[in-house]
Structure formats: structure tokens, C-alpha cells
Length: 524
Image (cartoon, rainbow, N blue to C red; front, side, top):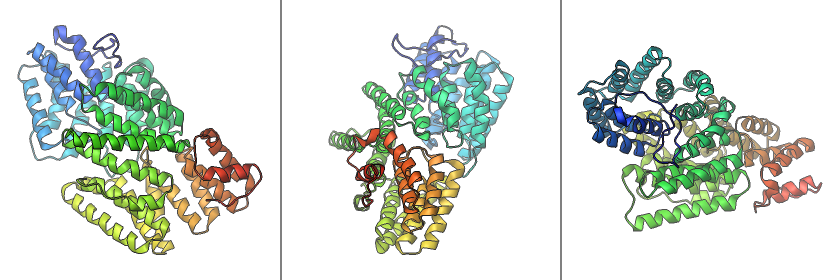
């Protein structure tokens, strides 16, 4: 396979996509590698260059249409759909040179073709077409990779299984053995395994992908998804530091690289907090917020998607820093970010209700719950798929649970938080999220039911290993039932993943050190 490169230092992975574009073969390979690496902005530039250099290259317009189809990131706008169809029409105007190329164009045409169909039937049709291409050309590794990606893209939003991921995995795994430098195989393997049930099967791809395509910020970041799932915090940190560096290198020519930088920083904050490096996490939060202030003063906020990402980050970084450090007062005091979309604002009120529950602020919890529900009602009018998604259902049960807990309705609270945990167990938590089952354990602990709490913490840790609060509170629960040996096991594990807490000022470490030294002091 040919390594697609723009210059001697660029590494995007090895791709060899046969096409009828003559002297543009190497450039075309680079474009396909960029698609596999989800560097869509640069892929669009690459295929524009090919289309200008060779006006008879129909597949250049296929590449342009593919660069607009961000399959597992978002649903294309009406404008994007029209733009994609325009490129497909150009691809169909000069008939492509081979039947295989015409099949690729026809598959994508099925997605973009004008009509009243929604996203789900379109992506289902596209996936079925890619399945046919994969069957027709079994030696076409890119067809296999794109088909596997389509299986991840057409998973219904309310699907609580991992059946699509398993189908993709069955295609990708044997091919990755044969083509260990192919960027799409490694990348989509990681996405397929990005859940607690399958995470360990994605470790080899995670260890390879950053080596295969280090020039793409997203490629450097993606291994962090698996490392976070497996509680491998230093590896997670290393991957995302590399991603931030790659994104910053790309920012001059690619403003869209800010998405990659912020996404990597989200993972960095999480990994720093789990490994007892809250000062470094806070530094990332503060520097990011300051950079937003500077961009705002410079009127350099970019297009609407960029502004949405900025407001989302303005909300999420402080919210999760406060929740993970259990600073309930600061979380409860966070103000809604002006100009944030309803989807982003739900995160603020979700966090408020959790904090209200811990603080037993019943009246405030009901007020914040009402704000949350009002936002959900707004979203339902324009994006019902968002509200009906499994993630939204999990989040809704969490806010209802903590609002009930604030009111002293323990049975109602526990019913809802357990429902949230059971549903989340089927699909897995988001990579940088607080497990619902850990919340259930927290609630049981606050209800003075430590034995049940310990059992739930243990279950949460099996699915989300090496979480700081999971380990520490497992130790607390074990202490509460008089099991000093079990408590020591969890406290020792916490000390191991945090380097003995040498970089932390969290009060939890004083208790852990005293316990392990044989001296008891009150738990914070």
C-alpha cells in the first residue's frame, strides 16, 4: 500500500485507492487518508485541488461529497445536503472510468439525493449500498473500512445494544492484521470498541493509530478513547497532549482544528482529574477559558459550529471540574453561558440538579429541574432524535433522581438513578463522563447503606476502571462496613494510579494516608 503524504514529514497512514484520475493518484490517496482520519477540512481542500487539476476526475467530486458527510459526528444541515448533492451531480456528469468508481458514487448519491427522507433512512440506504460494494469487491480494503464506518453511523439513536459495533468489528479486525498501517481500519476499530463491553478489543488499534497517522490531530487523540475506557491515564494524557500539539500546528491554515484541540483538552482534564493532577486540570480549564475571552475580543469566533463548540466547552469544562472534585457549591453557582444553545444549556441545569441533590437544596433543585425540562421541550420541537436518544434518557433519569433526593424522597430517587445506571450499562457511559452507577453508589452511601453502595461502586469500577472517586469511595464504603482489608485494597489502588497523590492537594489523600498508616481521621 502507498503511504499518502503531502511532504516528507506528513504521516496520515497507508492508503492505495485505485482510481481513474491519472497523475493525481498520490494526491487522491492522500485525500482518502484524510477522510479516514476525519480531517474533513483538509480532505475538502485536497479534493478541490484534484478537481481543479483534472476536470475529468469524477471521483474528486465523490471525495468532496464525502468530506461533507461527517458520519458519526453530526447530521448534515440542509445547506450541506444541497452542497453534497451538487458534488454528486458533478461526479455523475462525466461518467467515472470504472464500474467500481460508479458504484462508490451511486452509494453516496443514495444519501444526498433530494427528497423528504430523514437522516436515518438515508444513512441506512447508504450503508446497504456500501455493503454491496464490499461484497462485490472483497479485496477493496477501503470499501470494507467505509462499510464498517457506515454501520457505526446508522446505529439508531435509541439503540441500547452494541450490535452495530460488533458487526463493524467483525469486518475490521481481520483486515487490520493484514493492513496494520491503514488509517481507516485502526480508526474505526477504536470507534467500534468505544464502550465498556468492547474496549479491551480496541487496545491494539489504540496503540497503533497514533503511530500510523500522527500528523492528524484527531488521529493522535483517538487512542485516548480506549485508554480512558481502560483507566490508562498516562497513556490517555500522552495521546491528547500529542493531539493538542498537532491541532495547534494546524490552526494557522485550518481554523477548524480548534475542534480537535478542545476535544483533546476535554480528555486531558478528565485524565488529569482521575490521576490526582487537579492543578494541571485546572490550568487547562483556565487557559481555555482565557483563550475564548481573547477570541471574543478579536471577533474571531468563526462559523456557527465553532461558536457552538466554544459555548459547549465554556459550560462543560467548569462543570466537570467541579463535579469530579465534588465542589458542589461551585457547581451550583455556575451561571448559564450567554448565547448557548438549548442542548448546551441542558448540561448546566443537569449539573445544577446534581449539586442541589448533594446539598439537599430542595427548592433550588425543583427550579433547576423545571429549567432543564423546559429546555428539553424546546429541543424536542426541532431535534426529537436528540431527546429520544439513549444518552438523553440516561441524563433525564439522573436529574429526576437528584431532584427527588434533594426533597428527601429516597425511594423515588434510587428508582430513577438505578434506571439510569441499568440503561447506561447497556451502552456505556461517554468517555469523559461520570458513571450513573457511581452516582447510584454515591446516593446509597448518603442514605447510610454502605454495603449496597460498595457493591455498586465495584460494578461501576469494572466498567469504568481506575476512576478517582470510584476508588476512594469504594474504600470509604468498605470502611463503613468494617472491612479494613477491602478498604486498604481500594485506597492502595488509588495511591498507585495517582503516584501517591504527590501532585494533589485533595483532602481525600490525608484520610487515605492515615488509614494506610493505621491511623483513623474523619473522612472529608
